[in-house]
Length: 127
Image (cartoon, rainbow, N blue to C red; front, side):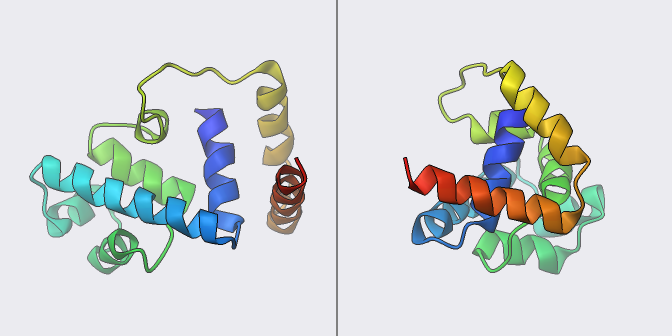
């Protein structure tokens, strides 16, 4: 799950076209999951305390959910972050290094976390 939190954070904070494509998939996947459970936006909003307008905006790709909001929606839809992002349904465990990274990131303020995400994005582009 930690791996997906880090990946999700990178996707949300990267302004590249590739990132926008991934967000569209996230939004479409979320809507597909909701409709497969025969839930209306209204009912999902009531179950999660997330506004109907915000859910619609996420599903249309007009806004990006925070990790906390996405987690609330997914729990109500009977899944979790790891399953949602794991298309091939293999079980993934964070490495020791990934666990250390997550612990370190938790102690950063918002600006420091954004700077770290930006740095990681730049490093990935240079590979």
